[in-house]
Image (cartoon, rainbow, N blue to C red):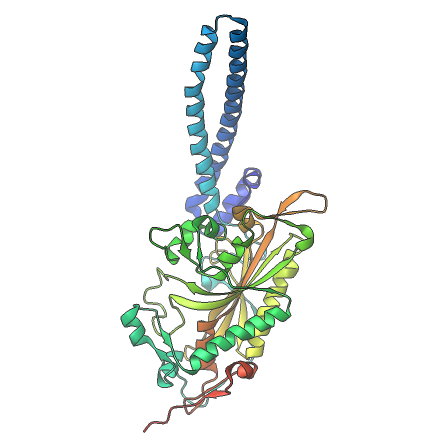
Length: 428
């Protein structure tokens, strides 16, 4: 979340940021936050004064008792204080909760390089794709390819789980795990610590990574438990140092998280209903960085380079897109998407995102570090979807399909799959 001191000193900057993000309904919050914060600060002073007064009178009463003197006036005086203190405490709690709740829902300040725009149509292509494959035969989409090769069963999954679920079968299971192991091996060689996190988080932990009200419709709640299924390993990795203070010498901390991800995909009705591109459950490898402000740009470039290298090794055509102000998520200051080519749709689709979140998540999670001068600062956090495997599987199927319906396997994955192609099924 934003620092209240920053908000108070930069009212117009925060309001302009809300306009750029198309969140004008929150502009009135900015003045409410500052007003309530100032009022709560004043009440806190009054509370401290009354509590101090109560302590002084108590001491005076004890002294008068020892001296055998009349304490009735002092008793009358102290009896008036509890009601006043309780009333002030209730007002203070109400105001501080309101300030925190609104601060938690204000979005991060956009980076100066982010283009102004309303939606994805205003995103900026910053790196054009490598050579796009040309096919001398009619291409099929990943769903038809997978069904024809007996790699996928959507009908049975729909019966037992509902829409947007799937059974992976045969070679596609091996290919899925090949992608996971390939990405983990790659990042381990880059000195990332491999992490398999909890698949469920408490609300306080998950709220450190996201603006909860914005993301709540997308995640699954465990009934009668303070637990939510994670929508991405990013949320659990961010919580790794919840309420911790690191030493500057430890930074940067580079984590590579592997986990299943669970998404309700609320609001995505009628979109990507076929296949495994937009589903309720998928696997993902996540890069996550804790660092200092000075290290952030270098670390952002590092995880972006890692992301590109993975897709270059897979030989999947891609481009990089800088998200506009209206498309950038609340938590991020800047996001670059990697979009890969899908031949059947003749378009690029988002497969991975790389974001700099500044100290926004760290303030929510109270994750700090001690500087060389023994001062404490909030860390900066950065995250990147290195590989979301189901979407990448769909992309591989389409880009490496052959005329006879078979699928070539990217060479870099051969040692993980144990096979170089998924052979076409001969019709009897």
